Image (cartoon, rainbow, N blue to C red):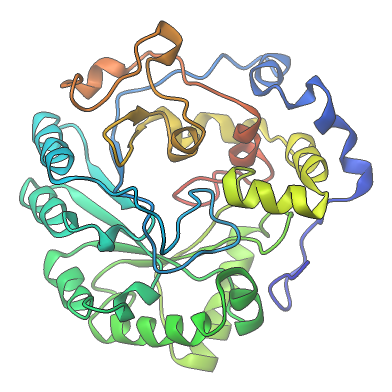
Length: 343
């Protein structure tokens, strides 16, 4: 297991594993045991849109199973409906674009421009190296012109950890991309640029504030790079990372770690309460993780919802949120969400 140099974190041990193989991984039951109500939706504030699973990278931890060979990509008609839905729901404050690499979808530019014209904040979840993909040299200037908020993957400040997770040469390309973005004003006080840390192996992220200080020290002194915030996100036992855990014989061990580090203080801030996730095909979900597990909104009532039959997203408030064992990934330790630690 590789950890960021100079950072200590509690690693899973055999003694933490027994709870995972029994009923202990029932998230709803654990909520009840802590006298917490079942999760229900509040009024949506964020629309997170997955533009597809095509990506120029194939990271080991990817819960989306994204990669260069994936064919799932949002169509023009679906993108046009996303734009209509944004306009029809003025209470949405943030449009959060993800993938795969969302920039590789041909509708990326029109969604960004339409959302910004409607006065919404736009987050782009960028893997950094996409700006060096063929035909994508326009991206950095477009990010600046559109005034987007970049959240960029950089799972460590050391080349060894980054390339273990993301492949050879990715660290140097990521540093080069950050230098370009810093020169354009991102992470330098004008335009927001956050970095994302994911553990390399089956362990919880270190404390976010401590790790952010180390990132600033290492990236600033070693490479002259700046950023706004570091977000620590736990790896979810879904798809590619789940298969890696099974291959290593550590799936039960990791689930035991998550279950036994359940933190009730994270529950009130879970992102699924105020976020609606849109799939590349227009399906609606409580979160990106439920999307990857095919747990759509409305499934419990026998009528899975899509953007084509839902106009008023505020009407989703009060609906029960679909939960499962993977939810412990968001509620373990300091918590985890697309916005980083929760507690």
